[in-house]
Image (cartoon, rainbow, N blue to C red; front, top):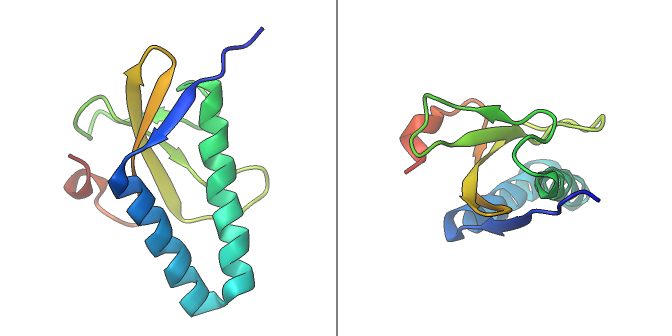
Length: 109
């Protein structure tokens, strides 16, 4: 039996997600925003498998033992990283959801 990890989003991560979806709707339309919201949701759901989910990477360049997971997966395109860390026994804390062109270290506490 595999363990299902609890995935918690910080207020910053929730705000990032809302901003991303609003921006996508403005630039590409409501339909594309809904598709991208689902893409992000699938990446967040993948973290329920734990920090070793395929595609997750330890990031020594980020503070606090942070890891990243790119939202592009399962044939879906995306340009954002989920920045997370292990928050306890079988708990993942999502710190931010950031554009992959950003200097991530500047935006992660």
